[in-house]
Image (cartoon, rainbow, N blue to C red; front, side, top):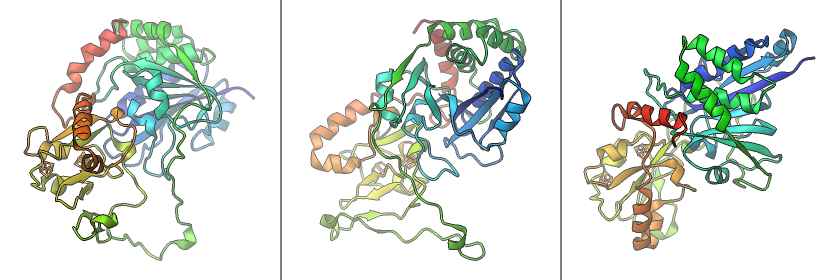
Length: 392
Ligand code: SF4
Ligand code: SF4
């Protein structure tokens, strides 16, 4: 029996799909240079990927064909040598189609395996976002803005080759830097700059050990799917139930309103940015409430609109439609530690809320889905190449 290697790439559906494909494909090609057979595949190759939804791609490599066949008999590896997370906001957990709740980003990472995250944050900032594991693992940050691009374009900012260089460092049994460089030359038709970026990443990347007592201690949200004998006959799709009044008993009479929402599919793992609302300048025009595609806004007793962070997918529509300058501002999701109500905070302590708001809106979203403004990713490529050169 030979050795099996498994690497997963956790990415944002559609926007990073090509990036994940490049990484997993090139892992297999680099391993092949050393006589190891392998295969790369997407976890959701035949399923819809909603914008921003967490998804996975895998590279499975073995020292011989028989071991590879055995490894491929499993739908998804039970554990991986390296987890690559190409968007740091996914550190909070991964919820996707067909997963029954929130998966910790490091769930499949082997004991002493490596979690590589592309981020501008320091490891100390990222560790509290990742759920705790019972066994130690290593965390490495590949410095840079998470590589996002739109549906039809690829942001060729060297993130893929820098990750390959990092894999060669952490898993030399899989392949050497030389094999990575040969694979890049072959795939990218002699891109010397990319070969250099892979080498720089190899030289500079470092990991720290994360111990079982470090990280987010919360139990990840989960739910149980109905058994086949519990399902109704035929195809029945229940409509969304009628909304109900605010649950807070204090406010029953004043008539706040909370729309009914999907009780199982929460959107927090879909978000890379979230809205913050200046309730002091809101003119109660209702536009955010009407236009939000996920029915996120709870109507407060005084007629303000409070974006519910269990439902918000971070699309930015509310910021775009709000007619009051800086009343709704999208903020990098990395700036938040919880999903609590902004309106409750504002109601309790308005000056403190304003100070909080001021600090939050300094954290601009780094990613572009093609919605915020065109060409954002094109502006980021030179910056990323500068980081790849070691000038960060
Ligand atoms: S960003 Fe705004 S519009 Fe989009 S889902 Fe969240 S609250 Fe709704
Ligand atoms: S769109 Fe802006 S001004 Fe209008 S209700 Fe929403 S937050 Fe208030």
